[in-house]
Image (cartoon, rainbow, N blue to C red; front, side):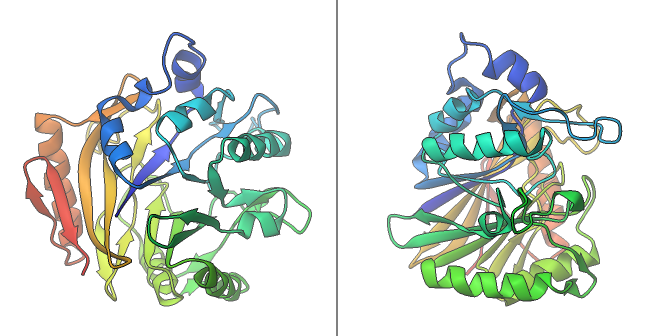
Length: 329
């Protein structure tokens, strides 16, 4: 059984203007030659780094530089890749206010795409996405340390917001997440935390590592990080995997020539007997607002840098051809 994960999928701005709204472009084109690998997996999950809506106004445009919103046709692009679940706890889902978020939630629901991490209330933002698997069920919880003003309230639309320090989650967030994971464990056989935390660049800080370790200690089977524009090392902790950052998957961002934030991976979790046995990394590149399989020097760069980043955590990534593999158990 395979579960495909990506990093940030941002369908706003130029992607929205030149791809999503262009009726001559089929919804499958944006995934190009990566699509067969995605469809081969049993389930597909992404972090949706924008709101899908045609409503709302920019949130605090004088102080926030970037606002991401995609036309409702973006749903067709998610359906073309048979996306099963999107995580929404991030720093762009409320870029156009509560009305846009509420419309986005309704569009996802009508399309049958599970979602978690944001909602019309705190209870909805905290609610896990429960995804049926060929064998068993997957529970996904999405959280972020971005935009504290967007923290959902009892009757306030917002995101599942958390804070942490060098010891991990700060109360009341620790107790709340511990209780949440207990409840999710009753509903699912495999539990995953989607964490949109930390800065845009650089390796995970000591506080981020403490957070990831604590989340595994509290009962998660996988920590799936993003927010950082480049893929970061994978750590094996207590026979569980921590993906500190999956990087960017689709966007219109300027490319740093050193960091190469246009390069990342499609991550395939291979399950055996209900547990994650391996993580397979397929190199990809963002080019002309699409994602495609990486080639030649791009693959070499990704293999070399990811092996070094994993080695920093004592993790070995084997490379055969263009594909990397990390054994979890």
